[in-house]
Length: 120
Image (cartoon, rainbow, N blue to C red; front, side, top):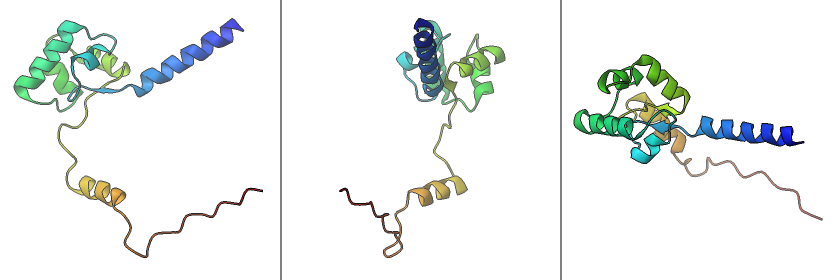
């Protein structure tokens, strides 16, 4: 029984790590330090570089600009949940697609909600 509980706890922890993505372009020091492999000095180096030269374009840019963060280190940190998201809002067709997805339907074109059966 104990093994089943332990396995379930490990599974929950694994899912928690998978969904705990931290974007290097928006994260503060505490969020960066939450990534396994980033300590206080590395978090400060990332924030200093981002503050001095702007957001990182991609993982390769992060590896080039921050001392001690080569390709393998960046890959390992990405596996731990570090992401390099877009530094600017979506442009062009992406913006149109997002706007269309969030637009409300025109009057008279909205589908009625499905009927729910009455409780007895």
